[in-house]
Image 1 (cartoon, one colour):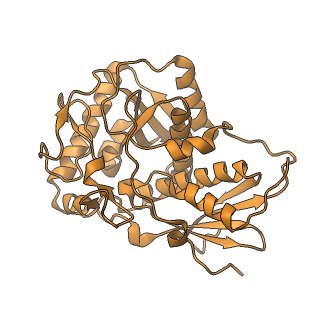
Image 2 (tube, rainbow, N blue to C red):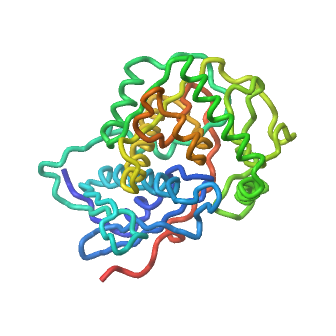
Length: 332
């Protein structure tokens, strides 16, 4: 196989793939810098894009960056490179969350994902619309579970009774967020008037989608104004498919691995024609996050609730241009 050179066009494509990852409130809290001598991309946190109230310890920021790292891996393989990832490589530099070294040697390298994930990452969009009642085949569920496992995480699909419990926990978190003045103000700050707004972060009001008329699935109301006219109610699926993504530990490296696992799952789902939406609300409250884990053991650490199904494709949220997220200087 011919190894492509990392020219400007390839670098731009890799960064475009990286920023296509999902991020909390579409904050896109990442920056990249290339060391041309070692062909290594540094992936750094952008703390100015953090959420002080909804994400005070930066867990969601790390999950978002982890998803971006996975997209970098997919793009690197697509262009013929073998990516070598190190998480938190310099303890003295906590803002450096990962490095992705692009090695030209493919000898002994095993691609740890499907070959069709690169086109899928451009089609992946969160869908906040109702899904159909069509069942997800067992082999597809198994593949999604394996995708998470390959990244060091666990994805478990719950039975109906447990699904109802998880959704109740998420609904309680949504209620808390809505009545908390600081969090609701912070949430509204990331709303943009419409898709034509020149801003490149946040969520256009037109992509928010409806609320569940039955109030069984707590879709996030970023406006913190329940039943507002801009959030019409529709009937969502009566038996939603919910996957709980967990990690064994809850360190910064686990958050980054959870992000890679989440994006791996989402891209595999996209390749199978599935849509997904993320129910992050209970992750923002320590007691509710603990309640998500199966009783009575409460083992593991919840990182995300993922709703999956067949339905309309969600609209794309805006992304920052590669030049806006990369540092022009090189690393010496």
